[in-house]
Image 1 (cartoon, rainbow, N blue to C red):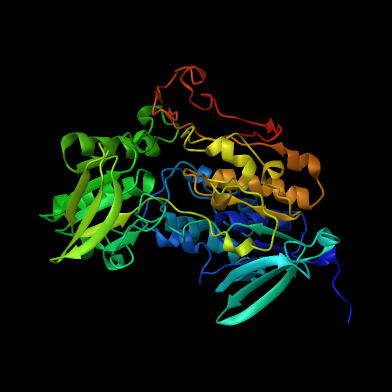
Image 2: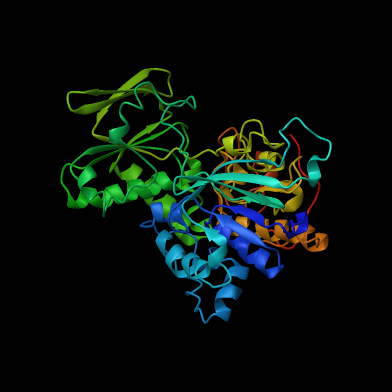
Amino acid sequence: MMSTTFAELPVAVLGAGPIGLAAAARLMERGLPFVVLEAGGRVGANLLDYGHVRLFSPWRFNIDASMAQWLARAGWQAPDADELPLAREVVERVLQPFADLPAVAPHVLLRTKVVAVSRDGFDKVKSAGRNGAPFIVRGVRDGRALELRARAVIDATGTWNRPNPLGASGLPAIGEPEAAGRIFYGIPDVLGAHRARYAGKRVLVVGAGHSAANALLALAELAMQAPGTALVWSVRSPVPARVFGGGEADALPARGALGSALRRLRDTGALEFKPGLRITHLKQEGGALLVTGMGRDGAPQVDSVDEVICATGQRPDLSLTAELRVQLDPWLESTQALGPLIDPNVHSCGTVPPHGVAELSHPEPGYYIVGMKSYGRAPTFLMLTGYEQVRSVVAALAGDMDAARRVELTLPETGVCSSATGTQCAPGADAAATSCCGSEGPIVSTRLAAPARR
């Protein structure tokens, strides 16, 4: 029996979401063998988890060019580029049709949860000969252990399944695990499947991002239909500039409208706003949930609610690569070179300078983190960024370093940028003068520079 050479081994793509499947499309384009491992029972499982949410970016920003080309050859009709899709429609109209293509379907393994990645015969400590050893990808499929060898690994597992806790210290609040039955992590379907859970209830939404905004706006609509429904909004920052956004200055009108609508809710008193609240304790008492925290003035605050929606963001699963030499930003847990570009302590822009294989490489050659996971705990990631990441990475795996280094990307401006001091840059303001980030114009056809450092 002939053994498979290193070059003949597949590239293992972890995750069959939009970025993972875009990687598969690029690998097919380059004629490289691949296998896609997906923990869920369908491709795009994370998107389906909030499938009822309408995205603020139109189709033009949500379809990978390579996937579109493969689908078009099979007679697929592209959606209207300017329409705003529901999250589930991205799966139903793009990801699933692509995964069903005869050239793709045999290489997608569903219900396969990856639990570890290492080098064949090498733990993290051993060096001599390491770079020539295949990767070992270990997983569980339908309850049975699975292990395969790969020439490279593209980790597009995302962060959705690892939500941050309510506790402001990065740890669950005291009593949070015991109150789990009253807490929804993510974006519930308030007007649909979860309507009965929230109708007529006092609901606390925690978080300052777009997930929190979606939940609050849906609750506000429910409040007009179901008397007794009350909204409480808590954010840890005293100034939620990022979620209010740039309004009409936002290059994505629906994103700007989302923040503007939320601002109106606050200004009209349709919700109770608690800025600067850091939750420390949860306790179920007398049929209600007592939420205790410290206010922005340092004084303790206690509120009684029926339900909590936790939209405090997500974090990456770092356990998969315990035996690999991975270099991450020490506090964001993002790929290290991206840390200074996306650190919310410094700025909260919606755009990041174009980047590719140079910034996504690790001391472990052949291992790449792409998509939302490449941003670690940082917020605001657009699919388009991930599509360009995998285009560059796959070009490098194919040996086309000219294409890998040439990064072409246009990202829509948010119309707002905040500095570490909370200063908000108005449209047209001098960003450098106010310690904000970025420029007003989109960055297009930019050649990679040396990675920025702290």
